[in-house]
Image (tube, rainbow, N blue to C red):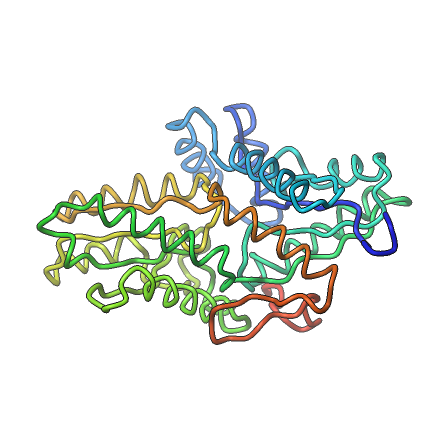
Length: 342
């Protein structure tokens, strides 16, 4: 680690997912730790994984992304190790941080697989990284984080390309009137009121819609998926499936869904969009397509490297396309506060 480069490793951080039936139970236990989730609810979610042989696509996609980022770093002449760790499934963050320590890593920069600001998509990852370093103890590397980057061209441009590709798959007689739905993980409205999550998703969706449909022929909106909390608490709405049903009642005959809030292909995309939303569309007589996630687009890996490089040189142009302004490298102490549990 030379004086010109304060980092000797790049750590990719993701939510994680099981890679076999034996990992589903431990994965769900980690995800729901500290929450009063009825056992029947956990059994219901576990049964969903059974349909996919207990495998989430996320880990495989993260391996591929780590390889692509490593290649991109080498092409850019950065002699840097790339690691990958998950919050809730192997390779777990604490184990990866221990591996980094044993490899002699002193200071790393972490990229989180969500570009949006909220407690669950930003601050919680920082807390888990801090906890992993504490568990490793003396010698654990110092780990800084890459800024939220919801409007970076490396996200917006691939997402627009993938949505354009999806639109072509719709029947010719329905494509011109298709409704564009940008889907993201729902969060409680009380949390949404304390962060920039909704504004950032709206900003990103508008940027993508303008590229896909510069003439404004396709109505578009942000919808929500993967609600997991108490039915007594208000969460962001409308749910993507509910919105497809209501659009059908309004006469809409086709929808194209972009998994905007989930840039890396994962189980929630497979279940909530490819299975449940697609089924709701079929029941309503609505043609349905889902844009592919963007993690395997070369521009996405290049974005991760660019975000790394901007931390090395303060004079680097920090690219953004939206109107909300750049997020700081280090989050303010009062941003995205944790939920207050009863």
